[in-house]
Image 1 (spheres, rainbow, N blue to C red):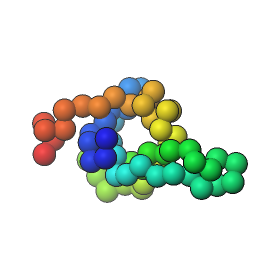
Image 2 (image 1 turned 30 degrees about the vertical axis):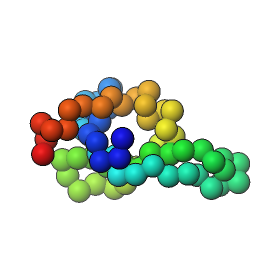
Image 3 (image 1 turned 180 degrees about the vertical axis):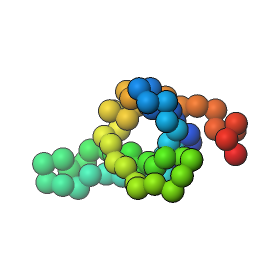
Image 4 (image 1 turned 120 degrees about the vertical axis):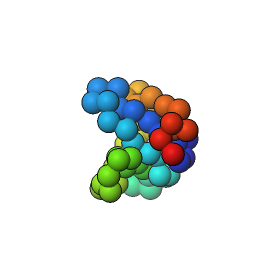
Length: 66
């Protein structure tokens, strides 16, 4: 998943997964989150819960975007 390209199912925008992290906030300790950013421009880094990310995004063949 890390380094792969994903498409947001609702907007069609492409995003690259930068990393997977573990949320260490007391109430959410141990939850996996995805760190990602837009692939076409320098953009802020976004964070989303892993289950929500996999629901809202789909992996695309990133060989087309090298």
